[in-house]
Length: 80
Image (cartoon, rainbow, N blue to C red; front, side, top):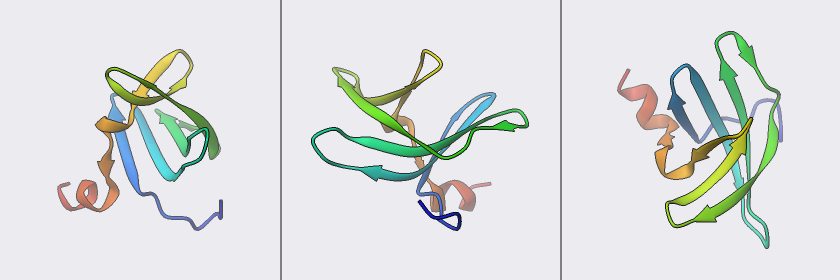
């Protein structure tokens, strides 16, 4: 995880913005992300990915963020 790493996707769940930098595949999957709510932003960290009938997701503060709701970063910025 370098400081200059570019994001690959975002999830917008007003007022929260989740920025995904990397997806790590293995026996257990992880996403590397920051979560911004208002002016507060978490540091980049790994979140374990879980799977259910609705899809793949990760948890933060008892909130599920589904990867299927992510928008690719290049598409996100082109449409603003």
